[in-house]
Length: 328
Image (tube, rainbow, N blue to C red):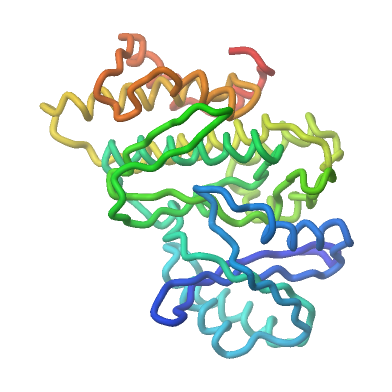
């Protein structure tokens, strides 16, 4: 990270017997617009499917206390593939007095990047929940996440059987299949608040994913479309990132019984939705087209035999899908 960048992280700790998450944002070189952006998260992101920020936001000038350093190390161990030594070095650096912002959030579960297996029905449920959460944020707040990866989509086990969204007055019901999906980590997001666009330059955060070819394709396309005007509203960014997550989500499929017709229908539906998604101008338009006037429980869908062909297409690199604009 350069001197004029910010870095964000999220650690899980225990508080009063319940899980809570502390999001920390280092404000090295952050301008007023970006600082207001982070504070604005706590006021405006009160949407189902988002990791909610509680009424605690603290600006601190100091090093990390031992509790926060320990939580950072624990988080690195829990996240599969994380380098414990890197976490130790990071904690040593963060003991140096410096300004940072601490936000307390509800516990949203574990990142999808740490999950290796989901049933077909859980994949479909998580996909729908992610899409509808983004669609609601687009519709109400002109929201763009701009850094949506498997690290920033969280799932946790729940007892609720059905969750509901309303888009433009229309209700959408999704069976949870025992998992609730949440979107978190808004350090690169763009949102309209009080008639003003709140945003941050996402490129410093993108640097951590330079080795991911699919994400590099997305970042390149977004930079071409936005042309460094990060305050402008371009919901296509949500479409491209959601498509990337859906591709990765499908890789976590645990094959069910070959005799289960619902698993087969749900998988075909997921593949068809995944193929259609990148051609839409916004996630909200995709949600209305894909889920409206349908039985969202998946019991009465009719998917064409072309899905077998689509399944081969969606396994190809992302670049061919990014050459289109708003077409379907």
